[in-house]
Image: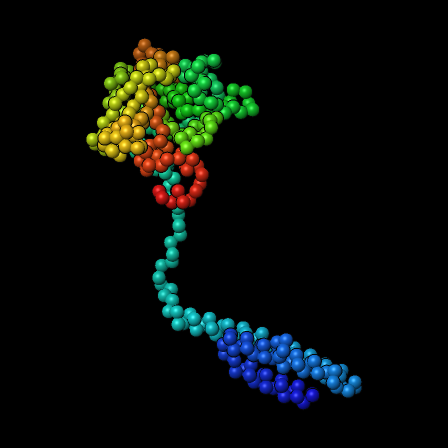
Length: 344
């Protein structure tokens, strides 16, 4: 049997050296080293040998198996290298071709609308002023003509912090006070700014309301500013935002920090005022609340209302974005769902 073992080793080595593919190598492994391979069958026959020959045969059989296993591993590495080289050569890879561009993502739909707002107001001479999102109660309410227990406070459910009188701002209007005091230089300089930013209200989340949303506040303070200036400015913004033929209308309203106060509608830019599902068949879409800055607010900002006047307005980018793209659920904006965001 030792002679048979040596013969089997020579034949197996010869066959292994002739193997050139992974499939053929796998067949050789099963034939030679597998559970029913030649080496295994030889080792199973050791029991039929005389006792004095078993030790020598078993030792040699293990040496043969180790040699063939090592040869198999070396041949496997060689064949893999050869096959890779053939694939590279036959694949005709052009290394001079540009690589695949990395996906950089895109701008959030709210950001796109905010940028458009900034472009338009910049063209009209308004600067951007960024105000804080964490405010004190006085600046958010009291200095805007909403003293404690004022009924208008109930219109804005507020997030309070563990620090007394420190809240998350409910609107961008408190930025008016800070801007007047900073840019107005003690009530001696005119200002013309917009204040974009995030606002927070403790509300039930629905398809039409969220606990966080953007606003764009506008403020102009100077000598001799009148309601006609406000109406003309808003009308010009509407034409630049919604098209040259955009029509606007003004309705009387109430805000504690402006007097008189108005709400602004633009003719539905989807149906041209004929009436559709988006405008609820009214032909008009609300785009802003506005008014002349209340004398108390001017005074709190450092201006003498006997000499200075101004107007203010507030707009919601998410609402405009929903109207432009017929989005029926405001929760999409903050869900981080790529199926929604990739559409923009």
